[in-house]
Length: 206
Image 1: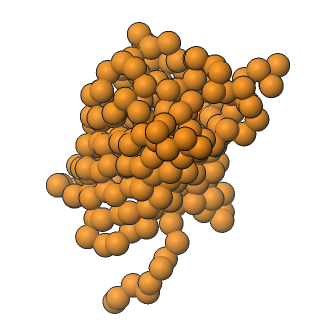
Image 2 (image 1 turned 180 degrees about the vertical axis):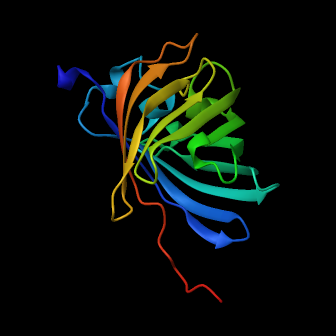
């Protein structure tokens, strides 16, 4: 059964430049074992066009209050193909807000925003949609329930429900179930994610 299901890998990196700025590189939609993927019409249009997608990202964050942070960002790139005529510019841009209650970690963090995605990146369906998400601690600094969703009818329109565990080494393991957003024709799936939250590149000034 496994060989009939598409498996893809996404890798994202970001470097903090200070004053809320982040820049990085993404390697997206790298097929792992479904060699028939380009013939599968149910797969995201952007994934079918090339393997993988090469994109750069940049984000600027702002701390508006002690409970409200906001950020705007974009990632842009292209899908390498053997035929240069099939190469397409891809873009996904966002505005996201993060909310939390100071002094009450048990209330978790909540996210609300909006996004724009061009056709080469998101396939058919809506170009502009909403983003929602949340993280609720189960065991403080160790285990949390997480969910996030891109709302709409395009190939990106899915929700992921799951949990994240933080090891003593600071590595994080996330496991989740992917379900299609209402009105979209996307597939169900399983998400496995490894995250390292940051490396100090310079010494802090006291």
